Image (cartoon, rainbow, N blue to C red; front, side, top):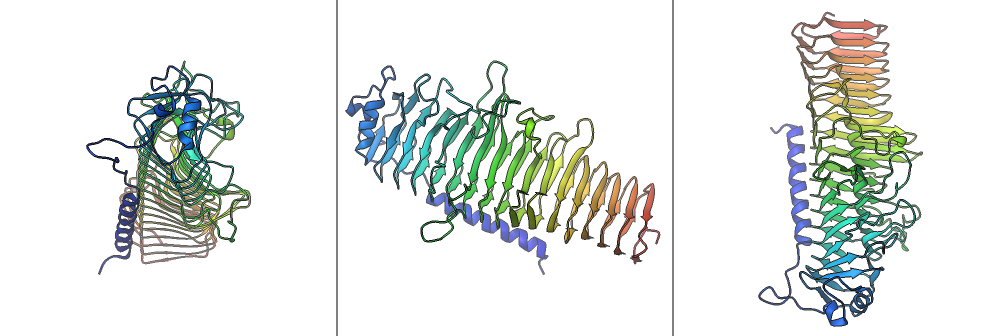
Length: 530
């Protein structure tokens, strides 16, 4: 008979691969039209545009776009743009390997290419901002900005924009696709000044039902000794007032972020505060992505992002110590942060099968927190959280849960010198089961102020084993503790509890610490003084 956890993990992997396969087939790069590699379609040169970039081509480009249909930017061409150019014909397709290049100083607070129609395709074109035009306030400027439904941005290269590509926040636009693009992001964050907080994104969707698949997002390098402080690699976000369409249907659900990469600049002087952000988008799937070198969070799942899945992602933190980016906000820092604030309810989230590899101890692995909101029904299962070393004081926690209800931590592996492997505070109906924890400088599992079950966990080479403090009800059963240096079990100030079937091996300093726990019963333990 297949173990239930093994069966669940197998089914999750099959579902993930099936989803990626189906989605990948639906957004495959279109073959070039014509034969022998030739392309068909109108060129801006036909409308008088200079393909060398020496003369301004804005007016000619707008005439070219106005005709719609099949349009081509010839390979190797460079068209200078000094104002926003707009696609206004539905079903327009722009392909080719030519470039649209922002002229120096001309596009501050302006978008280069706006798509103001539905069902358009941008395939394989380049957009460049060589002078890194930027502004910390005023209108956001995009390389490509969509103002319509069912548009596709495929295989494009967008370099050195504050907002490389995205869906406009001016309305409810849905079913857009971003796939196989390369974005290099120019951040606008100002250290300690609180400016530029609404820009600095690779792909930003303020619409609904968006698919973001297999894109490469990187931060541009800093300049003149000033780091490039980017905001978010990939951001999907609900805006107030856009929840319902004309028929009363909620369009803000079911966005997909699959198979993307978000990385710092090659020299590390440009970084994202968050690699991925999901804000108020229910039924979101964040699957099979890679994120590295963030300054705040690898993934931020926040607001009413109910019924979302975070699965099969890899987060690698190569940053040693905290960055000063946005320090005035005093953010929680974690590879994966599930978070609710402002009275918002966030419920029924699955965080499963993720790989977290930390170079230093300044970030939590996975964190769940209610901060003035309400988090419930979170399952954290089959994740791997490792840390290479801690700098100075011990690292925070591999898994940290604060003020949430009905949280299950099942089948996770937590290795390295975390302060605590698992820490739970003020959480009714919590469970820590079948986790493997080693190397913690504090307790492998520490639970305070909860009703909790801690069962069938394997703990080795930690300073402490299991701590239960101030828990109203608790069941500690079937755990295996080996080579714990301090207390095997520490039970203080608790209500009714059962400690059953546990095994303590090695030579802990003290196997058991008891304090004000008269309601505790001990049954069938090995190596534990009862």
